[in-house]
Image (cartoon, rainbow, N blue to C red; front, side, top):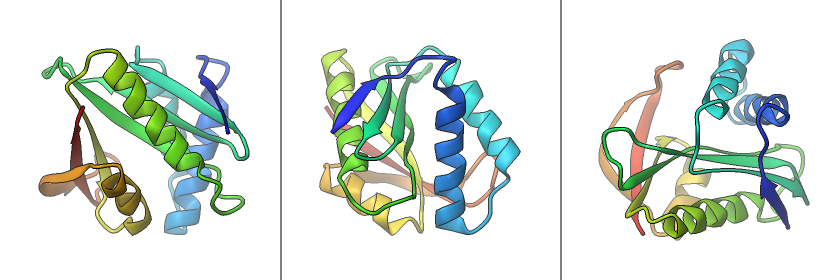
Length: 152
């Protein structure tokens, strides 16, 4: 497994493309322009950890700070190129995000996941994340998102 620190702006288009392709594979359709721009804008914000997987498959993860909760890191994106199956890239990116958040002194790592994304939910729960509160609408797509948290 090869995971490296992401570089902005050099990796922005690569990661935006991975995100759009992963969403299209999962959902069947996606507003490509809006979602790609959302990724690019998010990558421009200073982060706790921006990582890019280059082997065996492409993927990325972005962990951000939470302005109103300075001890909480927020896992904004985890995505793996949909070409191919398995390989543990998503699991490795998640472990990298947890490790770097803990190493930088955060007390918790939180994320939101589409409430019907059973594959991702299973990954997060196996890593120790637990559901928090009721689902809320995604800011762009509007579908229900469930918040999860992990005490570090």
